[in-house]
Image 1 (cartoon, one colour):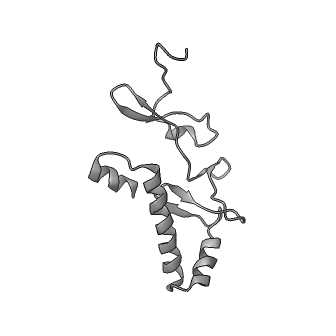
Image 2: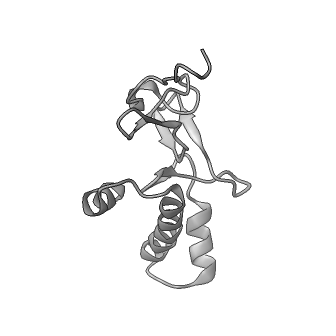
Image 3: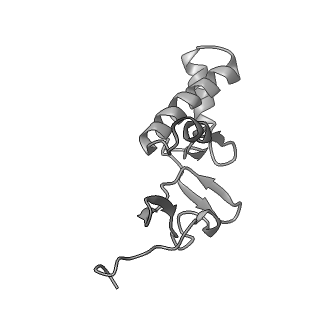
Length: 123
């Protein structure tokens, strides 16, 4: 989904665009699941989107807690990554790189480069 954006525009979409897309996509998912616009049915489907029954979205795997909070992070037991904010850094040559979270927010295999510091900065 996001790859189509990159192919068309030549750059990554903003995180707000991904969140907006995923919000509409979950509503579409619920409507398609029950084949109806029935509000109560849509709510039941949305409330059933959890860590055992997540939806794959543009920003990652989408799930909610029992309190309707968004599940975020990296489940090390299952290897499932839920919608997370990647730590990125613009590096030499204007290239955006994903840098390590120490394996706490997302796994190291998504890291594309080590973090760098300028000579005049933190050393």
